[in-house]
Length: 501
Image 1 (cartoon, rainbow, N blue to C red):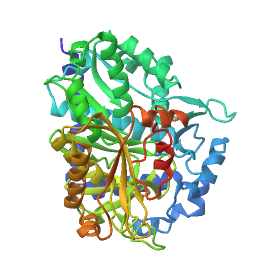
Image 2 (image 1 turned 90 degrees about the vertical axis):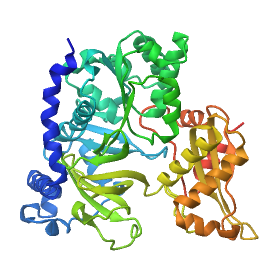
Image 3 (image 1 turned 180 degrees about the horizontal axis):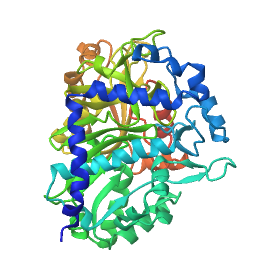
């Protein structure tokens, strides 16, 4: 009996609701906004901004835009047990996030309502969309390997936890789910990633694993250890029924070829999820289109700031109905976790409006614009993919930063790249990458014109495990921690280069 076929009707009903995204997007978002305003009207924040008298989106615009620094004081009071501050009642879970490897952590409130109508809703919809794409799936005939982080007590507040969002989700998951997932909670929540990787590998390598969920970089480390223990180079030999990897947290492009080589199976599929500490925002709903569907009926109201106005004193801010295609926006969210007009720090670009689909283009702070080139992370990912294809290379990790003008007004971009497979030549790789970036980004092309401003980019080959060693030195190994891909300063690259010996 195919268990998956028995449970599929539970998920197929949801697909009919998601179909409304194409025709009822504005109505769905207005409903979310109304719910948020009504729920929070009697909180300290709601009283301060007179939520009881907010009737329209125009009324809502009087609420100020916030960064984490501006919300931090309220959140810290909530962490100490104060109730009815940004969201009704007491919020006892806090997702620790930096979004980068910065030492300064953010603590994002995760309310009970947000846990269920945002984060768990996203997980269920990921399965629903996958089963819609693959009606012959047998994913529930085996177990799911879910790779998460860890958590610790929050101050001295009873039952309150702070840690990776994934750890909070695992801690509070429906007990029935434990019958179809691996490893057991005690191992999944270990804080030492190297110990966790070893235990997960040894425990799960003899299970019937059919699906994977996690961050591509950390999952890859676990899977490589499993094939090493099993004495094979094909994970399909270990888990012949493996069929889907729900991945998120970092761009999949640098890892795609490594996964294809590691899992040589024609039944294997990959779907991207856009879930962060602040919310669950998007899901890939087609194999052939890497753009994700914006999930618009969760407890999240969306607004957007055009990146060419980001940082202005009074930037244009538009709701979902006001976005344009192929334009970079900073995303602003209001959620059932008590985040209000909050700048999440990610930038996205819409590829479709019926339904609303998008790609993650980068971070508001992670791009290179030292010389007017406006190089975004999605530009970098596309350029690297082309360079890898043309030179036979594989990239595991990278970061890039500007080399500022010397006495002769010469400058360039410096890329520190860790290869899992070296290119036919580093010089050729650099030439292909540079040319691809010019084709993708007209501002970069203009600055590279005749080598007048920007000189050809420079590549430094990183030693094996350089980036992991750097993360480990900062106690950031595993979990949701990420390598900063692009930076306008040389802070990160200089730190990492010191360990490239």
